[in-house]
Length: 565
Image (cartoon, rainbow, N blue to C red; front, side, top):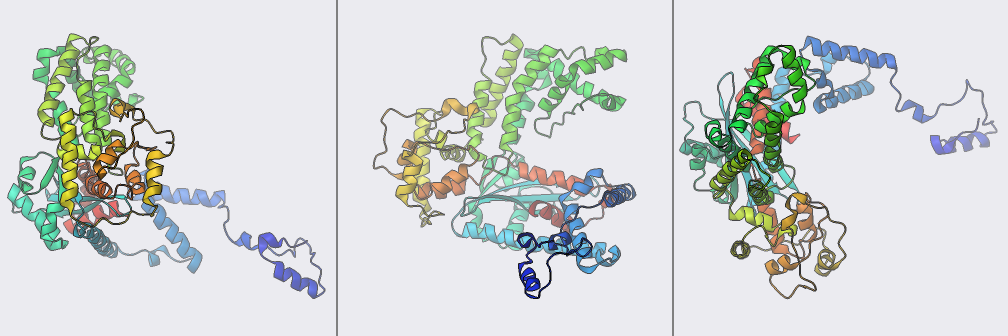
């Protein structure tokens, strides 16, 4: 058989054989195997079945969920053990796996090492005059009643990449009350004493928190924004207050009350297992659960009705009429969409807050097709939007929207407020008094300007939820020799991806260098403190009944690594 040197890399051996006068043909039994046959092999079915049995054994013996075998951490461990076997041969697993104490110690050491890297990056941003967004919240575990204080940090790198990480989840002193002064003391102690932040740099941190009086008091000397998800949750809680709603929309009030009661009954009676979909329970402290509960009932309304009739308990759903339920679900959907988008931490969100508030205000305006009760529901929510959002939407939120090129004319605002925002931005640029670094991927200003303003724009991704406020331009309108802010307002944006806002500023950083720096400082600030909420959701799964002896330092390390790795 002739050697296929292209596949086996055996051309030199083939030439040597010919030179020695030997034939290159051989019998099947004498055929030299290709090197590729010693590499990747298909795992036999019998071996896969044996592994499956061991997975079943592990899940049953150690009381682990079946999806454990698909976890990223388990796959990394399994691959490393396979690599060990391939390198060192058949060895006892017990001789390779570390003890629990060794794992715990290494966990804390690895967390501190990576935490130091994160803190160094954040301090470097602040040292160069940049801004950092941070959120904080408090949580108490269910078993030992230990209080924890979390800090998450958000910043934009010089390459215009948004980073959002959990910095720490530290135990709050047991003997101290959760007053504003004590919370402030602990925050400063963590940032300055533990992580080495310059005390003067704390003024360049923008905090995003809920409206708890103690947290607001703790951060009164720093810049703080209200968490928009919490504000919207407050609007919904007041708007759907049962006693007040009974006065203007009794059918809606009865539907919400009856829905809560129905969910409780379904959970307690064992009906859940008989349903094609799970209906969700309302939790006042969690965002959007009113909408999710009503939507889950609406999705299987007919099925629920049939099941209850078969049990002779149709009275449990009588006050939940499909029409009223449908109107409530339709009315609450934009609030749900707003909260979901504003709680993101993989993309900037601050620029969306103003637009969503305005969209919800429009949504709460009455129209001719409304029933009297739906009009009353809209009126209540419009009132609470105005009441709660008056101080929550700040100049920083408006500036963030201004930094979205598609909306930099701020057409959702009155003319005088548009001027005020532009003046605010100009004052921020003047106050910066810092050298502007060269933009990344240095294209010339002329090249970038032509690509962003003069070149034919690719088909832009539409923003239908806010399209009425997108920029408009007059025929033949051109840029003049103006300052950076005025020039930016008049330019025609060519964004193709709404979520790639930082990518746009990276591309145009040589055209608008000062505004690009401002974009890094403003767009790093999240619209909500949901990142802290997510930390505590993971904490609740970490400190379970069988792990109540975890030390606070180990809890901190685990939560940090869960986010960092």
